[in-house]
Image 1 (cartoon, one colour):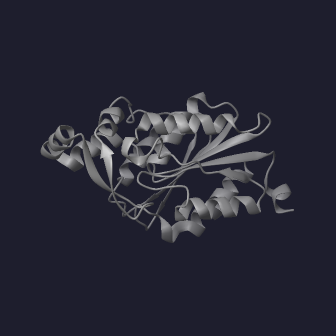
Image 2 (cartoon, rainbow, N blue to C red; image 1 turned 90 degrees about the horizontal axis):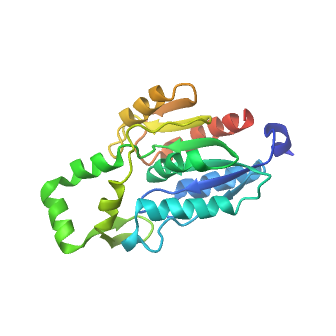
Image 3 (cartoon, helix red, strand yellow; image 1 turned 90 degrees about the vertical axis):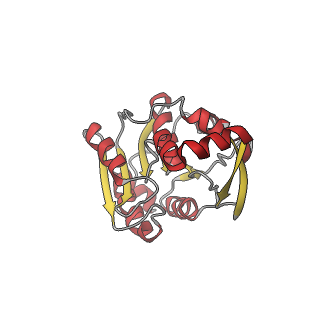
Length: 224
């Protein structure tokens, strides 16, 4: 059996999807399928809790913690996170028992400053005044309301000085216009004893790099 050849001990993976996405995203489905082939059970929680309109970073962290608690205590855990899911994985890591590694796909470091810069003061003021704003949700395929508390909440978290103490594999596209590659480069230098950074000629979605990311991830998992 292939899993017996490449894995040193039982692993469970938790895949954390990105903002305005869901459990059926292309990358989530792809990674879950490939992981199952090597004997790794993958849990893909819906982070849009209680719903997209009332989504916060805090609510996503709580869903992640609840998901981790469901993993049997004799299994090591790999957190795989895409974009905002990568940030959530990194924020969750310090308190996660039996955490073996992180795999981060264009992780959303620098979230709060990026949203402030992207929207600008006028748009933020309008969002605050109205209480909610329309945001395109890729999982739903249409615009959905998002409460202003989302922005309030992300400012409660420091994302610029994050550190890790487990093996961490990062994939980031050179042409990413959503989360600059520099965010992962700075994080990698700060955590150079633990982080492997792979850069590809790809954008934020990393769809054309799926095979490369999986082959590198499989080799990475075999070393744990």
